[in-house]
Length: 210
Ligand SMILES: CC(C)(COP(=O)(O)OP(=O)(O)OC[C@H]1O[C@@H](n2cnc3c(N)ncnc32)[C@H](O)[C@@H]1OP(=O)(O)O)[C@@H](O)C(=O)NCCC(=O)NCCS
Picture 1 (cartoon, rainbow, N blue to C red):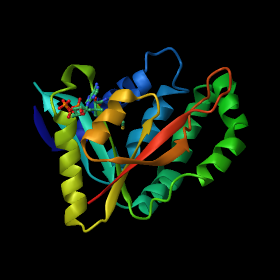
Picture 2: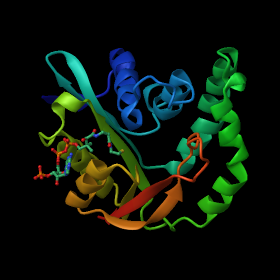
Picture 3: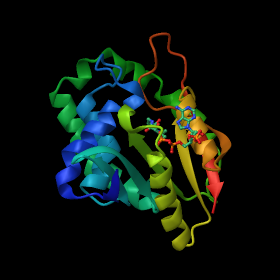
């Protein structure tokens, strides 16, 4: 397995890995609009350099990646002005407004925003990352190697800490971050279409000082 920096020719492969690992996406519509999801999760990195993006490649095929961010304000600006408007406009042309899951998501927005304000303070953990590997290459320390690369770079930049978020039900992801020395800081509501019964889903926020 080779770990290297992202190159523009990896773009389609990174998007594929992103979708394939989207909370165990099985193509049944759990993701509101696959292209919208992938745009929101990857374009800031693949198209606008929001932060370091490493890929793990085996036999000429990208099998996973880590997308990290050291400057969350810049990331928010990129998402707001460069990524979200175009991604949402594209999704609307694909029929987004006719999806009941969108309206469930929007109906839950006030509750989501109120719960978000009660999330943990992250001043001491200004950097963050997400890491996704295809199932065949999991369990071989590739995730750990990618995370260590990111932590090393964060340390070289003199940052005090790093945070990550992981869906509450993602047991493997939680164990992985705990193994790397991350500790739970609190939780945040998940921004995704709620299940049909409308209950709120949560993401755990983990932090690690450097
Ligand atoms: C989570 C993920 C990145 C871990 O990467 P990985 O290369 O498989 O993990 P590693 O081999 O480096 O494992 C390191 C440690 O994490 C823990 N861990 C990893 N996968 C685990 C699993 N399925 N169950 C329990 N613990 C697990 C173990 O403690 C492991 O150490 P050990 O092998 O000595 O027991 C990878 O499984 C993945 O991409 N999952 C899908 C996407 C995801 O959940 N991303 C995280 C949220 S952003």
